Image (cartoon, rainbow, N blue to C red; front, top):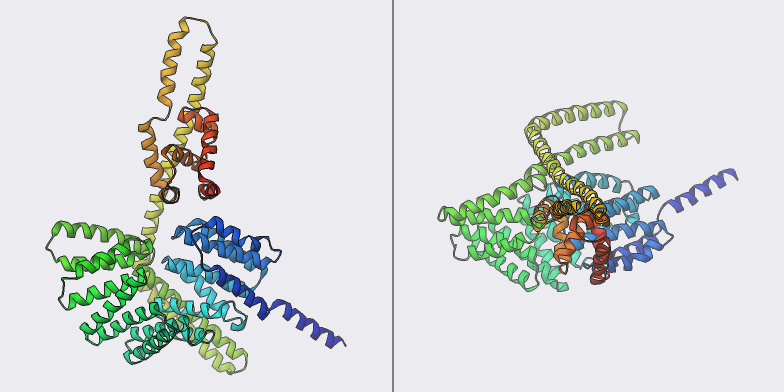
Length: 558
């Protein structure tokens, strides 16, 4: 009876700790339903409110994760609001100790970092998520097909051959004839292409093309044409490659796939230069450059466009060439800190290090299970340690110079940031000191007004003149605004882009509010009454309507 009771207790505990199939499907349904987000965070919060109000803690985690995705779509760039909600969802999933939710929330955050090219920040999180995904059964995971597909993307980025196995694992959990499976087949073809295995590359591209045509996925078909062009380029058939790319661009323009059009245009321009057919290259690069300039996370493509433009110029227009080289230098400095080659190399070695650690761990597990003898265990362990030590020593020597340079770049950036912070905060402190002086002058003027002395009338005029000089003039406001934009450029641009109805008088209130000025300090500085400040805010609330709360959420965002 005691044995039966213990067995029953263990089985019951396992049932409670592992998510049921129905629960996983319900979570997947919520995620997929909310993935089609629009640029309206107010509406999104209303749509997700039922998750936030739910007594189920898992719903609360989904609320934060999906809200983070919503702010990502709204800002269309890396932003503090999304960062806060992504990390909150991961933190809550860990508190709940739910492996499936931990893996999904980390994956959700990783996809955001990958989309905006934050590769250096992304890799450690992905490595951790990969390790955790090995510790649970795939049937217990949330959206396993998306999870393994993303792991494949990451490994493709650092040119690791394990990408193919992740892609194939992803296909086990998706429909055979779908846009997703066509995309995976195409991705596997690209892996073989990178390894110069053209035969297998073409085989998978053809399989992907068959699925895309069968289900009528014209967008996927366009991308396959571009990938086939790469095969023909490697075979030396440049004219055939150019024809495929022109078809790719045509489809991309028809279905408004700007990103794919940009990539295909860059490839076509490079091939046309090889064919010495430069007549269309400038026009193609102009269009590609326009798309690449539209998003900050397209800068690596913009770099390629500028380099090709310099090849076309070939010294014919020194003035234009100088301008392009200056632009190229700025982009290269940016890429060094985000997704440049140095960062990718660091990420690649980080992955290799993690692989050695995982290999050692797997060997130990096998030996514990009795698959190896004690002597073999010691030999393999020693060999692994020696090999790891030799490999790490070799890598450290090669990467030492690059690490020093990256550290110097980081210190320089932090110094610049500190200087910028100091400037705007000093300016704000200066304005607050002015407020104190204005208060003193107003008190003195009030005492003079209450006095009947003729002698004090001259003193009153002088004090009034000093008071006027302390108020915020147009010239002073211009200087303050320039310093503010230097420090809070992203905030200022977000306000201008999303609240075009704001006038200069509104912007003064918004910018001073951002620097934590209260109504009294604003009134002294701008030379108006406190009631005037309050009425200005009331009119602003009436003008913005539902967007008013969003404005102050953005202002309060640190």
